Image (tube, rainbow, N blue to C red; front, side, top):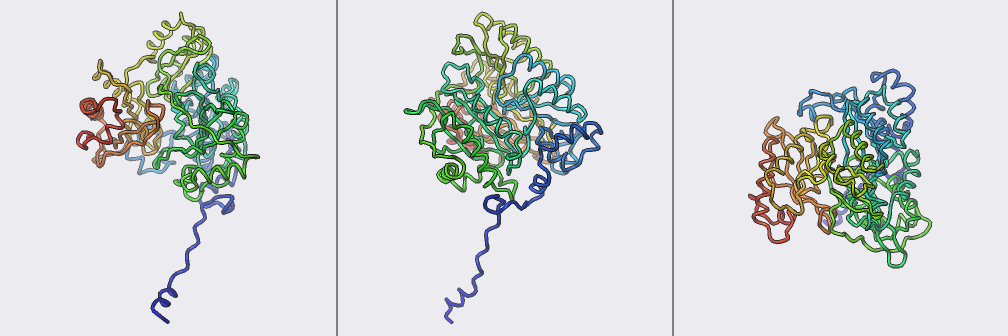
Length: 563
């Protein structure tokens, strides 16, 4: 036997690839504890136990697999136990961190909220949530301090106004984003609202789609400002005008942030409006059937898209899940408008909509009730939340605009905020979140307000976004902010932030998005945050070339100017 023969004979046989938990490839045998509990009992079934048992017998009666698992499908997470320091986030288990109260997430799905409905939401906040109410960057409303005993009455009131908490969290199709000016904007290409409703009706609360590998995020817009952060959703329908087929949607799939960020990719298809729900159901089904389930940190649709690519994804969608192929279609054209809809804008019917900033999303039940009063005084019955933590009042008569603007300012909801407050964002933070290491809401509010004062009178256009996140999960979209701040402990137990610079999305006055880049080895103590942001912004203003954005500058600037 030659040396070559000996070498070949000693080669180990190739290992079979590990199953990834893809139902259509590997079968449905669960490969981790999370998949086990989802298969043991459909998470939607926990609703009846909440109504019939847990709400009557109290917190101590809740089974752990429901408390830490299935409750999410009903929009309920245990909130962080008060008095725990930041170190507890990494030292204690989820169960040890948990309080006997819940965060409740109300699905809004980008729909309009009547003034009557807003008062119901306000009443739930004041009666059952200690006045808490946060508008999220997914257009939802988040409440805290919810007692399990009050959940049935909260649900009854929500259902009376057409809202729900079903699948607001969990491994399912979470709340949808819709253009907050859908149906009223003068330059709208198509109103996605009826098509999103059909998607919702087919999928949400349907046991066929209640066990997905991980969470699944949906967005749709027909507005040329691209106002629903379509690049970072699992699936997005973006309004376009086909040269032969008329208005419809461009399809984007596979976006998401968290610790491994991916932009969604275009499939290159044109989705006629009447086929939108079929296409949506097909994309959700692909995720259910082919999504990776073995490892939780690889179970988002973005990882499947990375491995398949848009060509294969389109082929599987068209051949296995649709009854006919989709035509090729054009890409959306960005209008250059900011997609947050701050300020006063004319509607296509001649009336106006007014966009006010709920600073970092924090409001209260009392504030929401007063917004309903102001809207009615301005002749409006309709309100929208936005993906940028703002409130829009629709249908305002021209002679009522000034009084409405003044009233909103008095409520702490500026219509023309300073540039930093306008585009700032913050997640829930350590106040209530079990994953967080730092306080975010009040820190962001004070930092943004102080930056507006320090730069008063200076032209910062486009405004520079500062986003604060309490942990690596990017609920505040830190990778797509000009200045993204990821909370962590530094130098022992000092709360601070890792810095990411240069992120953007297409609705940020740029034609396409880019992810921010971390500043190597650099962290900022929370107490020094305002001074740091001021310093790096002044470096930008002093050093930028004509027309250069902060994102572009941050990629070419010398490292010392970024620290």
